[in-house]
Length: 112
Image 1 (cartoon, rainbow, N blue to C red):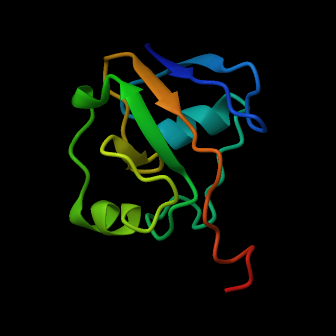
Image 2: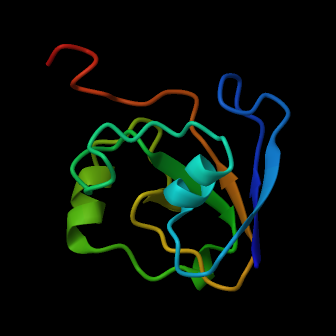
């Protein structure tokens, strides 16, 4: 099992969270399975940026982002070099430290 440490987020996990995940699942699925409500407006189909996370440690163990993921990330709020869409980042056997950004852009809930 791989350990994913989520840094504190005001709404989703105010005290932070440490979860265990099977290699081969996405960060988003692992979070959802452990009660962390990461937004995923496109139902994890790589069509939005609502599940944007920043990989603070362990990112080198993840497969490189696809061109589609990179294109979408360009539209994410608070983009950083280690940003990923959690619905696309598949957990391997290396522990991760993940930050969920304070804000997200959700075109559907914002009426756009």
